[in-house]
Each structure stands twice: as structure tokens, then as C-alpha cells.
Length: 136
Image 1 (cartoon, helix red, strand yellow):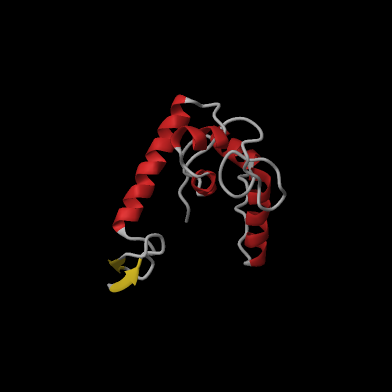
Image 2 (cartoon, rainbow, N blue to C red):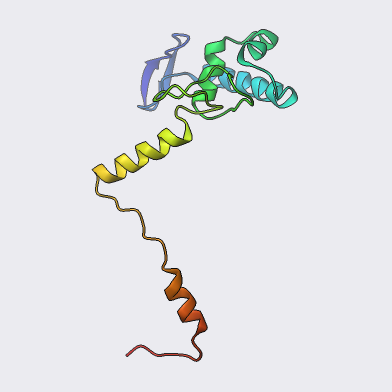
């Protein structure tokens, strides 16, 4: 562990190499997330500005929770767009279509083949046969 300054409050804390925030700031973010999650649960049609105004939480913090996939808002035009095509999405960074395309491109680039679908004819033929067979 090393000593670092918290990227949010500037307080010095003992941290693992990947940590950027002190435990107080992490707990504060967790508390804000719980408040936002509960508000959205109680008000499912709420928009980002509604949540921000009701809880006095900055809109960019709510967008961060949405981008991380921790939250999802219902309805069109919630204020979150796919980073690739610009289509409106309820949570995350990419729409389903772009995510599938990027996954296929990634698999193609690294030579990962998609598993072949099972041959239905062979399965039916095997299930129709009677008896037990021993492979020699």
C-alpha cells in the first residue's frame, strides 16, 4: 500500500495501486447512489433533471451511475445516448446493436470463432434410434 491524495477531496489515505478515492468519498458516493436508486424505484418515470432536482444531486453524477450500468431509467429520451451511434439508451455506454457489432468485430479481429449451432437433424436421428451403442 502507498499513500495517495484522494482525487476528490485531496485528503491523504493509504491506497492500493488502483484506488483513486478515500474511503469517506467512496462511502459518500455509495450513499448518494442508494438515494438515487430508491428515488427511481419510487418514481419510475423520473428523468435525470427530476432526480437531480429532488435529491440535489448533480446530473453528471446520475449520468455516471447510468453509464456504469448501475441504474436504468425507463422511457425514451432519458438523456443517455449510445457513444457509438447516438441512439437513446436506458443504461450503459452502447446500445444492444452496437455492443453486438463490436463484440463480433472483436472476435473476428482476435480469431475467436462463434460456436457452431447444433445440427438438429443429427440430434433428431440420434434420439429416434433405439438401444445402446458402445464406441470401439
